Length: 119
Image: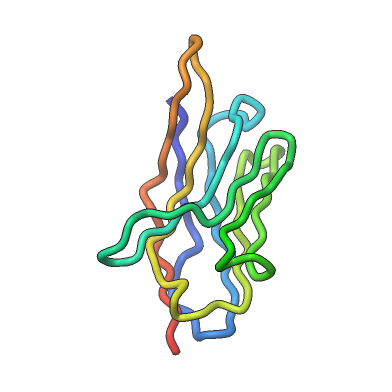
């Protein structure tokens, strides 16, 4: 089972930047798609950004041009660079990994890291 640990959340003013990190417990070459999701109070969990093992990326419309997702295979770490932050970006951010074991498709989630953007 892949374990994921997020870090990098915190309080930032509107217009500021944060970089989230997600450390994977094993070699990321064994993981297919990785992504960042977020959940604001009282709302569902939504995809923010995703990146395939081939490097193809996908972003939610609300973060395009402001957020950048990347994978560092040497560090087994997923990143989310967040610029020009807005109060509506406030949420708990979760890291996700999709991988296969013994022919089964599996999902792993981190514990979440809180991002708060003040106006």
